Length: 109
Image 1 (cartoon, rainbow, N blue to C red):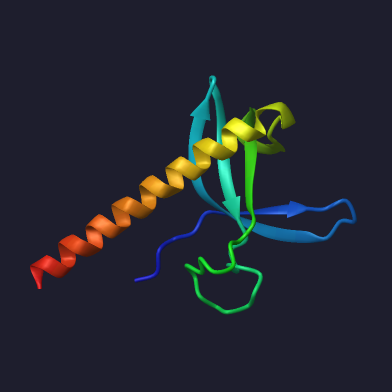
Image 2: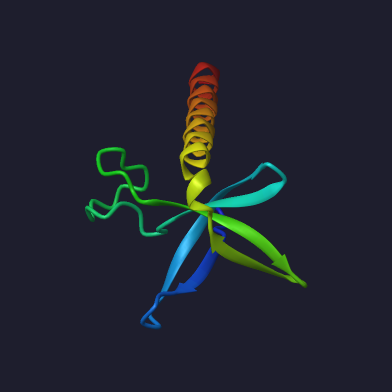
C-alpha cells in the first residue's frame, strides 16, 4: 500500500510551478516550521527513494497561518544554522527508528 504524501505547489520568480513534499514539522521558539524535499528524490536520477549517495536538497520553511490557509515562507537567515542542526538531528532519530523497526521485523521471522 502506498503511503499518502503531503505535497505543496510553489511558484518561482518566473512563474514556473514545482512541487515539494513535506516530510516533517517541528516547532522552534514558538514558530512552526516544515521540512520539505523534492518528491522526485535525489537529483542524480538513480530512482532510489532513499539515495544517500546523492543527498536531495532540503528546504526549511516557516509556516504562517493566514486565516484558514498555511503560508510557507523562507526561514529567517539568522536562524538557519540552528534550524539545520535541529532537522539533521530529527532525520537521524527517524532513521534510527526505521532501523529499529526493521530489526524488530527481522527477529519476528
